[in-house]
Every structure is written in structure tokens, then in C-alpha cells.
Image (cartoon, rainbow, N blue to C red):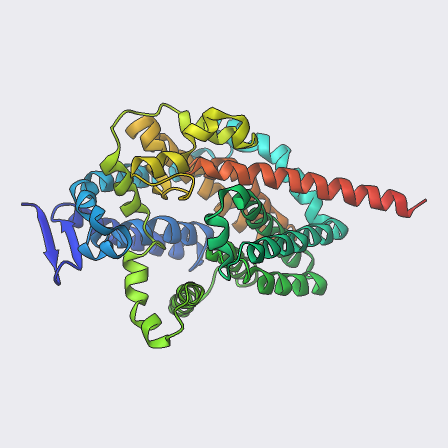
Length: 447
């Protein structure tokens, strides 16, 4: 047997894959050190992204991902997960290594590549221009904030009407109103990105006040990811632009742990657990075996019950069609990634939104290893594209360039989970409506 279990089943791993895993962890640290010595940046966009998306949920979590302790989240399915976890690790490994190939391609050819011409530049000329107009127009940013405030009041009202204190749980349990909740969550990401971009570009006091109000309002939504994302952006760009990437990583680690503990604590309180000692006792289980860093485990969960027939792009087509309401498209309803993952493992897709198969899960189910490698190259290129532009803009007055680079790569990063294409369409529609309304009101005010 190649499988090793330690500490009563707390750790479980393949004896050969763990060697590869440790080697990759060492390489990750060495790669960071090499870039630090070359640029002087202790923390940059590449490092932050790779740490949060790959290093922690893939390399660090691997020996915990098939532990019997995962039964607290997946029940008896942990046995099926154990049977396939190593094969799933290899899938993620292929994608992870391909990311570095993508970075190499950017470093060698910069913007003169098909990836840039086909997958980035069209959005750079359209969506990003629209975003930049919204950031530069203070009136448009105020309208966007008003949209969010009204939307938040709407979901709070619906939540109370359906009789629940946990707003997120209420909407997840009621598919007929779930789209409204998702819309407001996406709107929150649009508003926060615009406000944070304005703060770094114009250093406006009113934008800082609005962002503070935004954080307080978002606490009512009950979605950690949409509160965590603007915090990461705010902290990240403070490091990139104000500190020029120079920061004590020990302090960053301590701060990150505190934020993680607070986030999980908030989830426990929303679930009705008010005993502080019990919350603290369960933190380790929630971090290692809960649903915060479960990408590899959940991919293995779906993989274990999958019939191994490639979907050949069906979930991608369904994702591209997400601007069409589900009740108007049987295809979209049938082949959305959420329904595929939910039905594959035996959940009712009308109740359960589906599992999160990780960065490379969906592309693997559709196109196998070839899809994983191609997507890895694209993601590596896109991440380095953003990192490069942030470093350039950190030494110029055009701080907007870094934020614009993130917007320009929205399409690329939504290729990981096609359910995100709904957010891309909402992003476009909201910016268009806000811009049109802003222009209309300005015209009317001049009459």
C-alpha cells in the first residue's frame, strides 16, 4: 500500500505524491525568494494569487483532503473520496505546473501572444473602458452605491418575509428568489472594486466613507467571499501602491489568520452557535475539513461518482448562456456546472447549488487533461499580466491600470467555473445602466 495515515487518520496521503507535494512547496517558497531578490517586492499580485488559489487549497491541504475527519462535511462519502483523491491530485498538478508555463510565455512575449489578442484585448477595449469611465466619473460611482443599497434592502426584506435570520440560508433554500440574492452579491463586487479603484486613484474622502458603509452593509448579506474579496483588494493594493510591495510577511500571516478566524466565527454565529469556546474548538475542523478550502476534496467527491464521459463543453456553453433565464432554456438548466455537480453526487439541484470542483475541475470534466493544461497556461499568463501591470502602475500616476487589468481578465478567470459568467454579464449591465443614468441626469441638470 502506498497510502500513509498519521495521527489517527488526521493526515492521509500517498507516499510518492507527498514527496512531490513537499517539493512543490519548497519550489513555491524558492520562487518567491528569487523574485523578491530580483524586484525587492516581498508581496506582489502573483504571490497573493498563487497563495490563496493554489498554494493553500492545493499544496497545503492535500494531506488533509481525504482524511476521515472530512466526514464532518461529506459524511460517508469520504470513503469514495479516498479512492480517487490521488488521481484528482494529479489533475490539479498538471494544471498547477501549466500555470508556470503561462507565466513563462508572458515573461518572454509580453502582450504579443494569441492569449492577449483573443482573450484579453477585446475586453480591454470594451468592458475595461466602461469600468474606467465609471471610476473616473464620481457621479456614476455614487449611483452604483445607491443601486447596491437598494438591492441590499430588497434581499433583507425578502429574507425576513421568508422567515429567517440567516439571509444567505433563506435564499439558498428558495431557488425562486436565489437569483436576486446572487445579483446583489455580484453588485457588491462591482461597487467595491469601483470604490477601491477611486480611493487609490483620487484619494477621495467621500469614497472612503462609502467603502466603510459598504463593509457594514455587506455584513448583513452573510457571504464571506464577497466581504473578503474587497478586503483583499484594499489590503493588496495598499501594499502594491503605497508600500511598493515591501511588507513584513510575518505580520501579514498573523493578520490573515485573525481575519480567517473572524470569518469562520461569523459563520458559526450565523448558524446559531453562540458559545465562544465551542466556536474556537471547531476552528481547526472548519479550516481543514470544512468548506472553506475544500476544492480538491470536492473535486474528488464529484470525480468519484462521475461516469467518466467527457462533457465536451456542455457546461461551458450553459455558462455562456447564463444571460438567458433558466426557465427559458432547458439546455442551460440541464447542463449548468452547479446542476452537474449536484446531480452527480446525488443532491437535489433545486435545493443544493452544487459543489465547487476547484480551479481545474470543470475543465477536466469537459476536456480532460488537455483542457486542464490549456487552461493552466491561460491562467498563468493572465495572472502575470495583472502582476506586470500593477508593478508598472505602482511607479506612475495611473493607478487605475492595475484595477483595469483585473477587469480585462474577467473572462479568463471565469473559465475556471462557468457559473461566474452570470457575474460577468451583471458587471456589464450594471456599469452600462449606471453610466447611462449618470449621463442622462447630467444632461437634465443643464436644462
